[in-house]
Image (cartoon, rainbow, N blue to C red; front, side, top):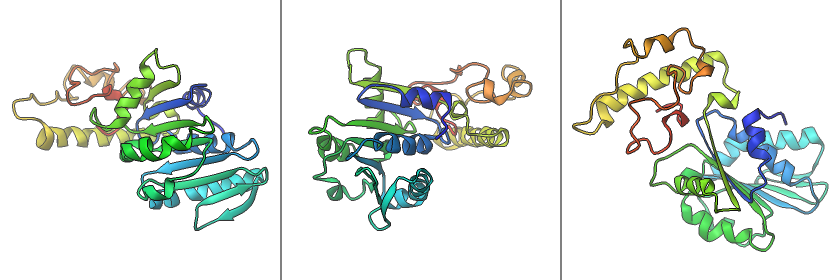
Amino acid sequence: MKLSTPQKTVANDPARFVVLCTGRRFGKTTLGIRQLFYNARMPDQNVWAVLPSYRMARNVWWDAVKAKAIELNWAKKINEADLSIILKNGSKISLKGADNRDALRGAKLNYIFLDECGDIEKEAYTQVLRPTLSDTGGKAMFAGTPKGISNWLYDIYQKGQDKTEDNWSSYQFTTIQGGFVPEEGQWFIFCSILLSRHTFDCHLRPRGRPRLPSIFSPRFLPSLLPVPLATSAYGYLAHPEPPWADSRFYPYPRYLCDTG
């Protein structure tokens, strides 16, 4: 499965626990499917992808996982109801929804990919999934879009930045850095940002806080038109940390989010 350079960097990280925070459409699902099959290539491995809900697992991941297993000619048995595939080498790939926590208990796992883990309850991992990795010494990757400093994705991202945590590593990338958004898609993101800025000013801006400066001011206009979107973090900003970013409201660097 072809990966972009940022995806390869994350995939090749040897840490036991890897955290990936990105904008939308970065290619987290593509990376996750690759990680499932990579970790299932050895015999008798039990690997899971855990999503916020069973419905998301079926609607977003299942068809792509099946197609990859068929393409590789690795599949021995495909279970549609259970969203699982038994491979010819005895390994098993399963998709799970964190909305049914009891269904996650009791397994011994070699690898877990948690997609949109910011939308998964922290206890689903700490109390249910983490113990499944203990007997095998298994690994896990946590992928998601930033949800604020009160979310456990923020906590584990910071843990990955701590040099004393040898088992942890974390990364952050923009949507555009993923390499999967064509030029017209970049303009769609750009328009989404404009709308979200309006939403912030009209509905979310705390009382007493100044409005965000207009991107059509002389300060920003030069970077709006001549600079290719892919060369700047937001598409219309020439620097990665805009002057109006306030860490109290944007706990991650502002350029991580593609929709504000």
